[in-house]
Amino acid sequence: MNAFLQPSHRILTNLLSNFSHTRCYLSTSPILHSWFVKLTNVTQVNTEAAIPKHTRKRNYPLTYEQRQFPKLIGHTKTWNTFNTSNLRDGKRKAETVSDDLFLRQFIYGTWHSLFASELIIKRRHNMIILSGLVTRTIHPRRMYFLIGYTEEILSALLKTPVKMEIQTIENKDDVIFTYW
Image (cartoon, rainbow, N blue to C red; front, side, top):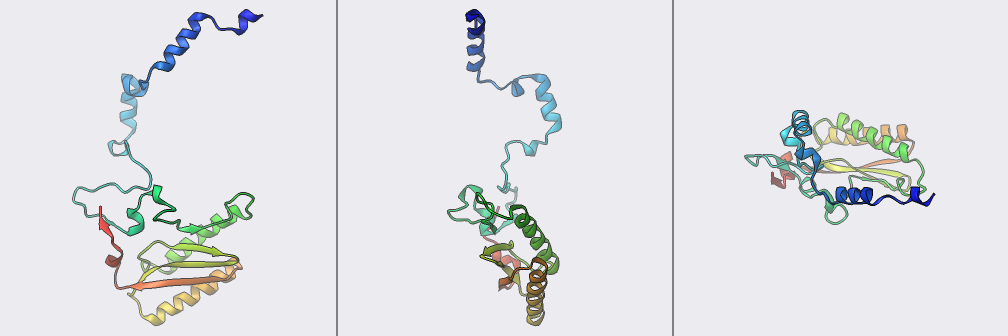
């Protein structure tokens, strides 16, 4: 019975020799390599998520938040949604995420092409606070109407108080931090 439990010397040496190889068979096998090249775009190789790609003429505008790399979240950059229900034993996890998606779609539809920055959603106790930068392309009376309309409609739909904190800027070029 003991002979079946212990591997033979030859199997053990084969296993150890297989672990010592550091070569990737995807890059060395001609069949797999040709399959990989046919199915992937050249620009998709060695890319990272949430990091903008350099352009040749460096004419792609970036805001300060977009210029910061994702690894700096918590140091020089914050999350766009302050959601504490995703913590352990938190309530309403799925509802909070769907509410955030609804809020973003509603704001971008109501404030069409007026937001110059990303929408920041903050949750404090029972209140939802929406903040961001808005361009001064419409009359102030209309902007006050949009603020009141948004707060009232969202408060009635979500059954929680919603408050908007916006700052105005002259044009969208004021938000540009650098060109990438």
